[in-house]
Amino acid sequence: MTARPGRTALIAGITGGAAGLLTGLALPEPPTGGLILHTVVAVLLGAGFGLLATRQNPADLLYWGLAYGAGWWLLGTLTLLPLLDGGPVAWTLPDARLRLPQLIGLLVYGMGTAAVLTAVHGGVLRGITPRRLLRGATAGLAAALLLIPLTDTMTGGILITTGIIAGLLYPTLFAGPALGSGPALVRGVPYGFLCWILAGLSLPALLDGAPGAHWTLAAAQAALPRLPAYLLLGAGIALVDNALRSLGRLLFADDIRRLRREGAGTRGVRALAYGALAGLTGGLLFTVVMVGIGVLDTVARLVGATSVWTGLLVHLLISQAIGVSYALLFHRRSYDLASGIGWGASYGFLWWILGGVTLFPILLGSTPKWDAAGLASAFPSLVGHLTYGAALGVVYHLLESRTNPWWLTRNTLQTARVTTEREQTLGSAPALWTLTVLIATTIPLLTTPPG
Image (cartoon, rainbow, N blue to C red; front, top):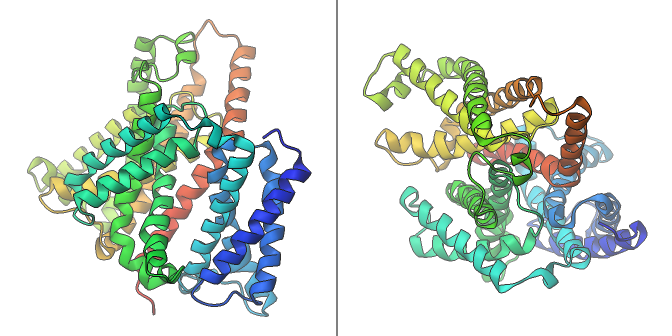
């Protein structure tokens, strides 16, 4: 962002104050300390976000705003406010469930503040074109049509309407350069979570004339069965939109710049080998979880068997296949171990939604486990998928970083690594990883009944 920090902080402070006032009024209970103090703090937090946002790409600010709101829920709502009130930190699951409305309010606050900054400094309105809107609507429609056979939590008409509206907004809000297919998928999941908050929780309350009434724990739990559909819808929109923007790119040539450095055939062979090995490593770690919950015999039913050993073999083969897909989608995306963990864990979470609670039950002749009971029973699998993804990302990064094209000098490789690190740091990658962790942690908040 090229704007002066002082001016940006002023705009963000004013916007943050307005967003804080609105969210304070929308909360089911009055804010701690009263509405005036709440608004003053919102102004200060908004100014702080404006200072942090001066170096970020305007097209990615929305994700940073969501991550900023989530961070202040952890630091402020769960930590500082209880301490200032003379009590212990609220780091328990019951305390977090009790403060779920504040989390939703802070996410909306961060989103609103970031949206204004994006519009002011990113020139979003000037960039809206019929071509971009058509691309977004097409992406939303395609993603919704693919989801219709998988869900009965939303009717086809509602899903298509939601998909088209979300698709129209996506390229409008995120007008940055085209991403690779892997990062686009990861970017789409938090976008789907945002759509769930806005369309699944906030919009019904606005239509009822009771803003924020659906931010309660009970309302969020009632809307939980639609959350996987929104997450997959967001991922599908991002993937299709990215594909339409990069129509000339093939799976083995995801980034045209990389075609000059490494041929498609070479990349494909390496992806098969590295991805299979990295996936096998992650799958072995995942096996510990699967043995603990005793589901290997259930996995064996995918091929008509019941043996635990057959289930283990099928599980490891699936792990390798997902590893190969990761290698193809995230080639040269991780610049260190931390970024490898970030991309890998995010990809693992996506596969928990797509595979663990959606395709896996369908292939066994059941329906997706999108209700509270199904998601709660699949929580150990969520831990396993996150562990699998993190191990997958780390091992693949280590393998990829050891073998480089012979015609590239060490200085050239270091420059490329630094460039990738800068692009991802100034982009939305760290915010995406943070939001993935946030979405994963909300699952136990919404699946466990209050008590």
